[in-house]
Image (tube, rainbow, N blue to C red; front, top):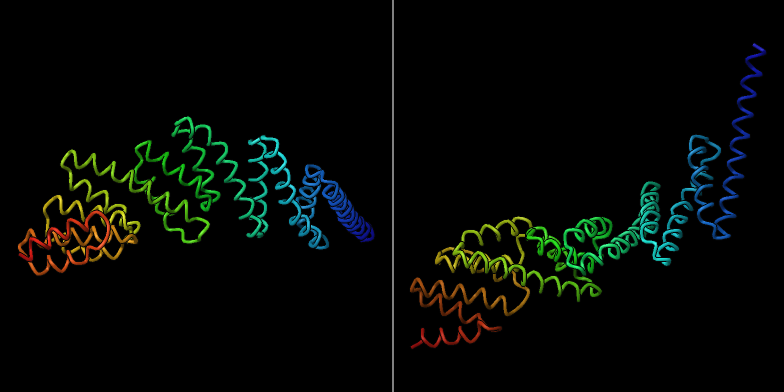
Length: 312
């Protein structure tokens, strides 16, 4: 019994000594951090966390190490970025974000993810500018996954998708950017809407050239299943039904399409198409009512001409 007691006492002493040693390691990490030797500091804090997390009397020290460790990787990432060493920067910013997220520091995790996104944006820039859209997509996808608020990169990713013929993926990204309301995103949101219109018109033109109005409707329906109030695809679908001469469907969907529009010219275009559908069905009063709602954009003059004919 005496021998057993001595063994237990010895083990306890070893555990206490190990905890004390790890506190010394932590202090060495702190000194390295203060001296801006972030690589050494990271190694020390990693050791404290790995070896001390199961020791009750190390709880507060391990918690402090978990606070400092992501910051070490963040600072290492910043240094590498300044030196244009993007691979090392990415590795360290990613570690910073992952560690912060693992240790429950959501605020700093989001901050570090912003830098992960920026590095991917820089890494994909050369391929994008060279129109190597396949390579650009492979890089930008990773950056977008890290930071969806990097709207400049998101626009490049969406364009790369569209240039590769992946229209739906491109539209999904454009929709996210276009929907952002904060003033700091205003220019990119406007650009997203402009690019959506451009690539949608290109897609519609291809299908119209083939007389495939059902294809246009199917394309619009896919997008509207994801975002029922998409102004772009509400209008595209309405135009396709008019081109198909399904006038009853145009009238059925007209108010919904007009309500979805955020631009007065587009809203007027929706009402013009409703008026045209009523007119085609010889529904004079309803046609007049619809044309009177056309007040802006290129459809306004056509509506005036249509009203003049109807009021003869």
